[in-house]
Amino acid sequence: MDEHQTLNARRDETFPTGELRGLMKSIRRVVRATDLQSRALARASGLTTPQLVVLMGVAELGEVTTNALSHYADLSPATVVTILDNLESRAIVERYRSTTDRRIVYTRLTEKGRDMVTNTPGFFGVDFVTRFAALPEKRRRAILAGLEELAGLMGRA
Amino acid sequence: MDEHQTLNARRDETFPTGELRGLMKSIRRVVRATDLQSRALARASGLTTPQLVVLMGVAELGEVTTNALSHYADLSPATVVTILDNLESRAIVERYRSTTDRRIVYTRLTEKGRDMVTNTPGFFGVDFVTRFAALPEKRRRAILAGLEELAGLMGRA
DNA sequence: TTCAAATGATTAGAAGTCAAATGATTGCCG
DNA sequence: CGGCAATCATTTGACTTCTAATCATTTGAA
Image (cartoon, rainbow over all chains, first blue to last red; front, side, top):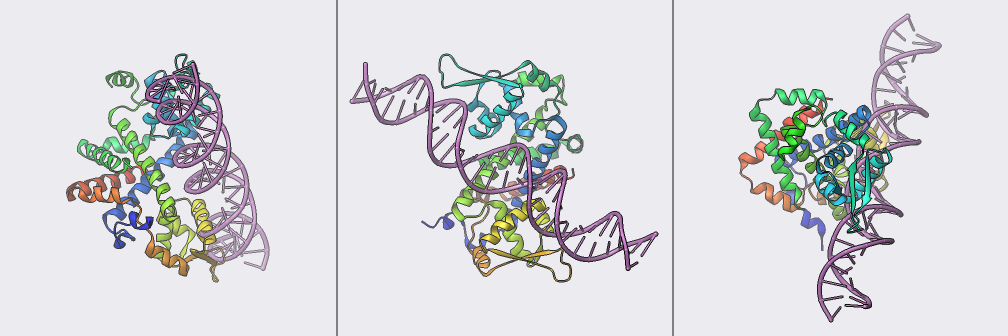
């Protein structure tokens, strides 16, 4: 009944202290940095990060359904449709219905899309890539492993 | 999977391979999980995660400027204003101009806001908190340290 | 066969976010 | 003084994302 209670592990977690608090703070910093990077990428290349992820999904998976892209890019199907609308209007991808099951819509790259894929910058800025690459291998692996573990913990609803 | 390697090998700047690719994938998973959690929180308590963070900032810092909240919550000043508009319209906080420098606007909790703070759930769902707490201390610290390091690397534009 | 449920994509609607422009005020310095 | 630059908050406009509802199609069971 009282949904506050179900989310409230304990009253003294109302103000998360220590680990959970620091965790939220760091997550928020990463989320924001990701958003800002996405905007910078859009200014530089005309593609936001999610658009680039979807584009790479199409490049990699070939003729691919909307649902498959949704899973690949970690975005809701509705969002993928919005992004595909955009990419299609710019003639970067094209969509067409399956002839055997007309519910299904496939997406594939156009010629222009293939060019774009080969000329598009990476997700991260060069400055970040440089700094990250400068870390000891051990740290890089630790960061990645920690992030994957966190994503797993947060992921299953 | 290996065909990705060959595809990437040519042009490792364009198609991030290996670590950078996995890093982006994990970041996107965390970003989405955070967004979904924020929406679930809003349904349950009427506050999104950013709203809750700003509210905690006000509760913690007392009479606080918009800029200070922006820094505290890792949000742009414009976004903080939007959130404060919302919280103020619900009588959770109130704003007033400094008498000594009329450019500055302070925000503080109302009575209702103080009640809300003590009854508000944490950022994370109980399921996540439970799973996270079940990890060995060493893993928890590793996740947190990795995330903080990543936030630092991404943060400096 | 027929129709209800399932499936895939899309649309409608609401919320959050940022950069850039704007308004208001203060401080500096010539 | 007096005006120009800096500072603080806000508004504007554009974009992304999600959930929920909807449309079209296919499948399965009576």
